[in-house]
Length: 232
Image 1 (spheres, rainbow, N blue to C red):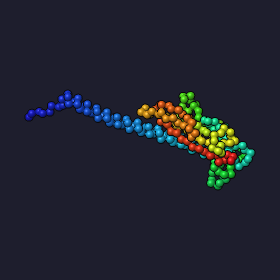
Image 2: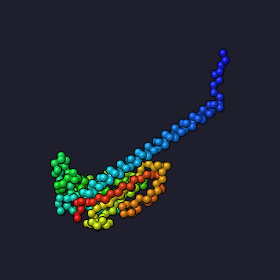
Image 3: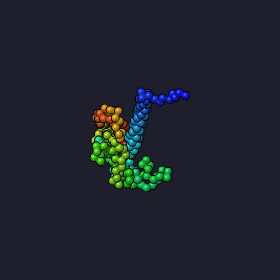
């Protein structure tokens, strides 16, 4: 019987290895691209959740600035800087005034004990770089405890503009009726295939973050909060 089992030639092996290499390389390239896209999307989602949660809390609390059932508490905007704001409100009396089973809610009408020294009554929002690495975070400080709570990481800009009844910018604490808040937050890690050359401005058209020309993706969020408890 004639043996026809000669196996593969060297050329055939080389060709097979080359084809296999091309296929494996293509599969890896597709996988790598998809993985990078997935990681980028995760970074963007985390960034957006980061800034929206922080902005919602700021809106809610700034809106309550100046609330008091008494005339003597002196609550309101206490410090109005371009990158920080401090305000007070008299919202605690230890009672369930709306009978919903929860005491001293921030929007509960009837709270107050004629001071602004209780928890959540003297609040400051500001950005700082606690690690000294050039990366800023958004903090909320409660004067009753002196504790600083991180609300958002990787905040490139926090800008606040204070408006009077006419809608004009003012630095007079007694004239402030609303606050325009603008924040720019970036992803924690860069996207090597992306270049960010965007110039970020507030509602007044003022540049709050110039062109960075880096690989970080960013999100700008802005709102105007009417201080419903500030003097009319």
